[in-house]
Length: 184
Image (tube, rainbow, N blue to C red; front, side, top):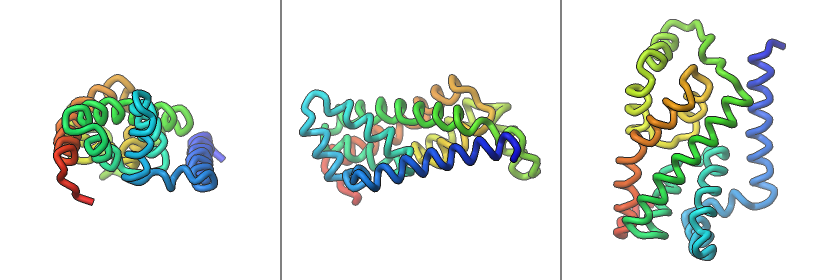
């Protein structure tokens, strides 16, 4: 088995283990709008740390980030919900990047399929611009986090683009939910 396949197998086993632990402990059942909101509010001042941890684990369990952003707006209101969601999302995608890159490596750098190679080359040629556009439209979606982590982008560029690209849509979502607009 080549090194890339071995790393991807270990990554799949790691993520599968996270999912299995979440299922067996009932943690993933708490990852609902009501469950997250209740955990945040019951933790008092430490609620943000609970929220950030749940966001990070949720991303590893393939739960889209906009759910956590909406909950932040519901729990903390439009202003503090927006602040909490942007900070927690940035922490979450950073953790996701480090874990996926550390375990899975950068197998997308070796892709030879012309169509995919063209897009991946563009990502490496203009990383900030490309990732900002990706984040403006695809936010904190776990497959996007994993794909970018397994490409050749640097952690620095990844985090800058995440902060810039996720901030506008997450502020809008948090404010809408903080004002009582319920899209669920």
